[in-house]
Image (tube, rainbow over all chains, first blue to last red; front, side, top):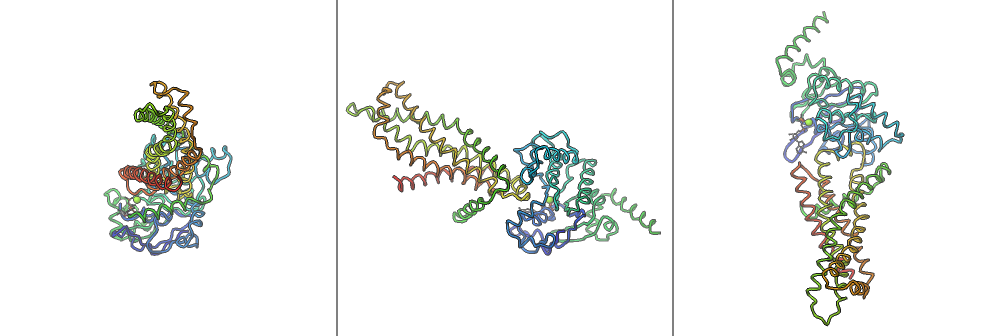
Length: 259
Length: 245
Ligand SMILES: Nc1ncnc2c1ncn2[C@@H]1O[C@H](COP(=O)(O)OP(=O)(O)OP(=O)(O)O)[C@@H](O)[C@H]1O
Ligand SMILES: [Mg+2]
């Protein structure tokens, strides 16, 4: 569980996060949604300490991250997996070496065990057989998937994903959502996902934080979101006619169920 | 940012580098990789400049000493001393500041800009010690070796030119080489080489590690780092000469 209170962050004159508070629960996929530039990436980076918030408190499982020493943060980070918006693969290493790197660094497994684990996660992200390719030789979507594989290879306690399925086709995108959802439940992880993808919101939105201009505008889950009367949220989510129709249908369905 | 702010951050970077490795084996591997990159990678250029540097000093010294009363063996003494004292350590290190320095700065700059450094940080790795320390250590090990090689090649190049162009016979050259040889000069040159090796690796690492922005800034930081390392080398050269000679 990650709780954060009143996080503020500005870059120079520009206020990006204006006092955001929320609780990210374990065993759930916690989504952060919002328009481009609303501060999702900055919020995630504040939570893991890549940006130091100007104000506010972050608490990991009851322990204050804000007051932790650099060494304690390092220890905690060994339980964090993170997928960056730009994948951030190591260009000097091939796919397999990228994924094996955390294993090499932090485990004493044998070579065979590591190879087995690498192939296991590669299979889960639907990339078996790309072991020897270099990041410059694979597509953006493949990089994303390698990034996810690297983030989950140590079964982290806290998983951060910045737009895990932007740039993926709908089918792969659903596969990745399902993968993240499944491992979250399986290992009782605290998973935090930034997304624009409405499909993800509906499918895996256990706990959704909707951000607008650096503030928390709405929270709830994927069921609540359909019935929400928050104007800005509705504009954001149900932007297209297609989704508006889908919303109508869902609402009618659930009314029928209630009767 | 002013000089003091940069200097303070540079010292903090060096201090942050000193921590217990998360995994000794991977650090060792990285160190070895850097030794190959820095040492073997710049072997070719060092060989070329050393031989030519020695050859040119022989020709020019001979040109300046055209007095028949002066023994020709003085030529090889002068070549020996200039190569050992100044050309090999300083000139080679200035060139290496360009070759090695720009590589270190752009490699780290690229890792910073594409968030690879952040990715390592998030895994719980001290990126200062994992990325910077092996580079500095490898430079400190390999660059003095390159400088020693350069001394030998420089003198050899001078001898070859002298003999081929008929300026001086091989015997006279060799006799001059051994005449009034001060072993301390070699020690002094190596002290210079160690100091310069540290500068060549740590200054570009500082600039690369702290890049902000994109590809354009990587290029800028790499240029700045080469300029700053060169100036620092020349400055250190002066200080060392004033203190130790
Ligand atoms: N390092 C930085 N320096 C200055 N400003 C920044 C920095 N990082 C982000 N910002 C600003 O913070 C704001 C929020 O950026 P952020 O990347 O969090 O948006 P986002 O919600 O993740 O958008 P997207 O969905 O497009 O990824 C933007 O206006 C951006 O200009
Ligand atoms: Mg973002």
